[in-house]
Image (tube, rainbow, N blue to C red; front, side, top):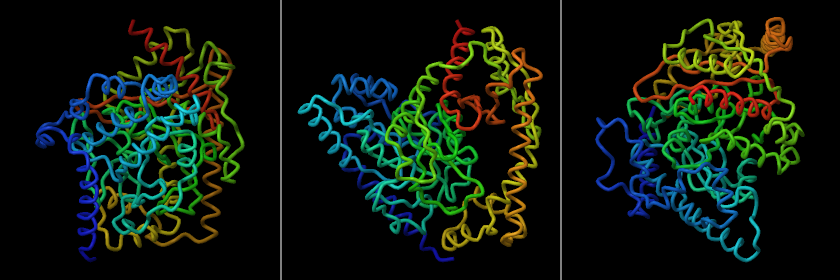
Length: 491
C-alpha cells in the first residue's frame, strides 16, 4: 500500500480551507477551542447578529413561509447558514465540499425572480439545504469517504433528489461528511478524519450521515439530505436530538448516489431528510413527490404524497402502540429505558393502547444481512481500499464478511433471498398477531423502540417510531399524536 492517500487528504483539506478562507469574517474569533473543551455547540452561532440568530433558529417550514412573505431575503438566509456552517466545520469537522459563492449567487437570482414576478420558484424557494457527500451534486466532488475516489468523481449531473431540490428553489451550499465505506455508525475517513459531536467532542454524531447531523444540530443547516440502509439517517438523528426519516424503499428518489455497493439489490437503502422538526420531514417528502420522480427513475413507485394523512385523516384517536424494550441481544442503559417508560406512561395517560413487543429473531436477522451485504465476499470494498488503509470501523465490518471472504454462488444467493423473504413474512405475521393483545382488536399502529444502548454526558436520548411499509404519512401523523401525549405529560 502506497502513502499516496496522505497526499490526497492533504490536498482535499487544503482545498476546503481555501474556500472557507474566502470569507475570513466568518471564522471563529480566536479559532477553534482546544480539544479538551468538549461542548462547543454554542460557538458556530456565537458571532451572528440578532437577525441572523433569529433566522437560523427557525425550522425549514417556518423559513420557506418567511421567504415567501419576503420577511427575509434568500441572500441573507443563505449568508446566515453559510456563516454557521463555517463555524461548525471549525469545531466538529463536518463539511467536505464548500460552495458558498455558488449558493449566494443562486440566492440573489431567487430574490430577483421574486421581486420581478411576485412568485416563488417552488416550495423550497430560498431554503438552504445540505447534502451528504456520496449524493451527486453537479460540479462537486463525490469522494464518498474514499481517498481513491477524490478528484475522480466530480459529478457531471445531479442526483434525482438534488435536481428536484434545485427546481423547488433550494439553495445548495455544502456537502457533508460520511464514513469510509458508509458501513459505519460513526463518521470517519482518511480524507478528512473524524467528525465530532459538537455537544461532546469525545463522542460521535453517528453515521453514516454524521456530517449532516453534526451540522444541523448547531443550526448550520435547516434541512439535510441523508441516506439509510441500517440506520444511517436514524442513528445520527437520534444521537443529535433531531428528526430523521428512513422511508420505504422505492418511495423517495434514490438514483444518483455513489457507493461501493452500487448494483447490489439484495438489501436496498433509502434517501431521506434530517431536520429539526417533524413537519420538516413532511415538507421534504411532499416536495420530492410533488415533482413526480417516478417519471425519471423507473424503480420508484408512483405513489403521490398524502398530506391529509399526515394531518390526521384516517388515523384513530386512540393509537395502538407496541413498545420494544430491547432487541433480545442488547439491553438499553437506564436513561434509554427511562425515556421508554416516560413515553409509555404519557401514551397511556392520553388514552392510547400500549402493549409490549417481543423482539423477533434479531440475531438471525444480523447473520442474514451480513451475508446479503457481502454477496461478492467484500471484493468491491477491498478493491476500493487497496491504497486506502481501513479506519477502525471499516476493519470491524470487513471482519464480519462471511463465507471466508469468498463470493456466494448464484444458487447460494437464491437461497439467501428466500431466507430474507421468509424473515420478512415472519415479522409481518408477528406484527399482525398483536391484534390479539390490543383493546381495539386491530394490530398495533406503530412500534416504539430504543435506538442506542449507550448514553454519555450531554448526549441525546432518542426513540424510534416504526410503521408499516409505504406508510410514511401515517408514521408522521402518528408522531404528532405521540408528541402531543409527551407534551401533555410535561405540562
